[in-house]
Image (cartoon, rainbow, N blue to C red; front, side, top):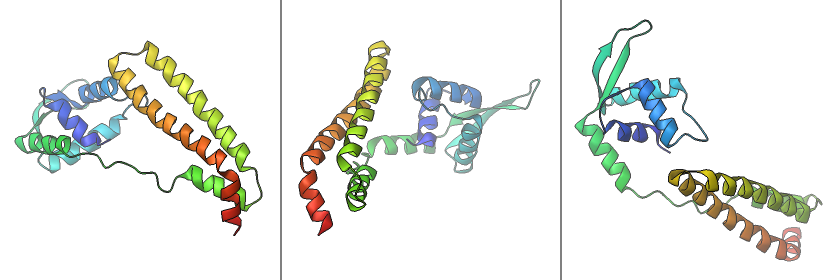
Amino acid sequence: MSIGHTLLGLLESGPRHGYDLKRAFDEKFGHDRPLHYGQVYSTMSRLLKNGLVEVDGIEAGGGPERKRYAITEAGITDVAEWLATPEKPEPYLQSTLYTKVVLALLTGRSAAELLDTQRSEHLRLMRILTDRKRRGDLADQLICDHALFHLEADLRWLELAAARLDALAKEVAA
């Protein structure tokens, strides 16, 4: 995820302080990985330097000065271009899981056991995500669905790999 573009998008609704941006980000996108304050302020500094945001005001308080950031026209254009650009699909042609299966076969370890263990871990995570999806709001449900669909694809691959394990073992040994 592009944190810079996400923060810019959040600024389109109006100027905000760094603290408010962090809170909005965490509420909408950071359920599993909240932003650190340092990450917000370093990103805002970079966006300011690149002319994508401007300081809309500075408030003095009991602590450090609080800058209120506003998106610029260049920032709005940048977000629009980012949103219009499709994400590159990840084909997973060199997955760690495949590497582990081949290495297990090459080193005389049980690739079948590795696949079974991985299958159990995928199912465990799917149960957690399904429970979270049941209790979550629409945004959480969509995030969980995305993860669940990827895990289901992985499970199909695990089953296929297990079914072809003997043939792969012969090919790897050759």
